[in-house]
Image (cartoon, rainbow, N blue to C red; front, side, top):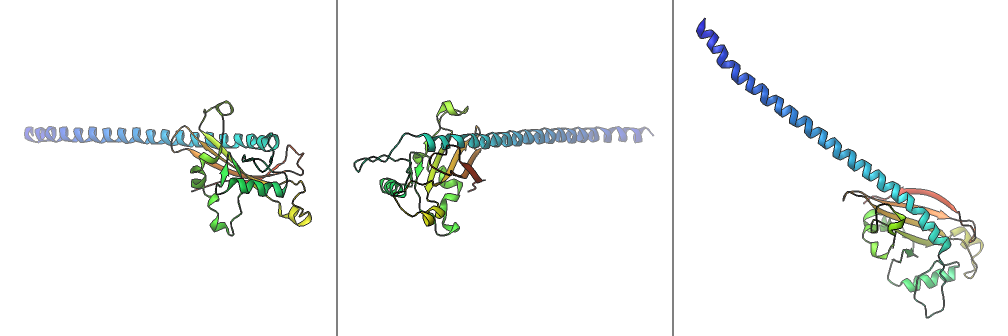
Length: 215
């Protein structure tokens, strides 16, 4: 009987040690899961804040369209501007030359097919910040160098059909693209929307369908 009791005591110690080790592993796994969940929550929260920041930049772009004091000037001028006629848009395209955009103003030729539209990819805009209009630190709580926007000016096909005169003042279709970076390196949003107005005196206009671009 003594030998049997001693054998039981000898087996109990390893069993307890194994149980302690399993408990430690379980605790580590639980802490790791909590850490992963915290990281995921922080990432999701930062991504959501970044999207909200991109949405907040859209009105700034609209203000730029309706309020920028800029005119085409004469043939000696080289600055970019927001055109009011098709003829002025052609002048803008000539000044842009090989540049897709400059100072956040674009007059891009629409691609023949959606497959050819590289400007529908977030990575394309992320590589074009040098040609964008940067958002100043006073306009975003995240500081300078965290948000940019571009305004692509396209003719309205209906207007072209009903009033094709290149010298007539006309509203355009404005494709507004916003890039916003978050606090975390992985957080960024490229938001794109179409904005139109009924006349050049319309300062409110209307936002149409918008989308978050992916790479």
